[in-house]
Image (cartoon, rainbow, N blue to C red; front, top):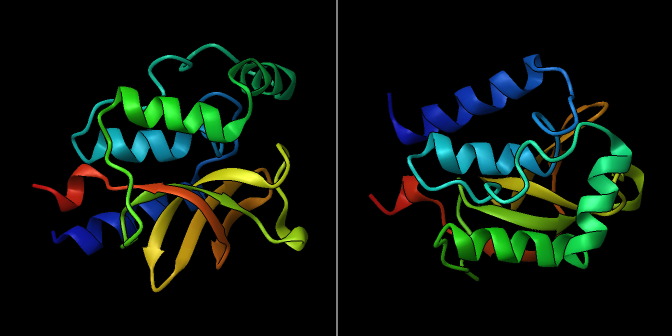
Length: 143
């Protein structure tokens, strides 16, 4: 199975997995992808620390915001930031107003190529273009 097939399978699995705070949400899902690619866990510091929307909001607020939470997680996992984003990279994006998730506009995502992103939301998988706040290279492209 090629790398693109792995990403497609990951997206298919996300469609079939119900939203769950702390295990299948926009904060944990990109970190799970990094782990599935053989990298260290960017969410290690907060994995298992929340199971509700209120718990997630407290975690994000304590970190100073989603950008700070993701930047710290990426640094702890040794992920390199990138401006040349390619399929399989993870990032923090700002969803368009019509697609806002339960945590607001800033969400964790996986680049699916062509400038498009995938995000798990409580209403299902969202695919589309969005403003990128930050992006990191994943191990699937560095091996």
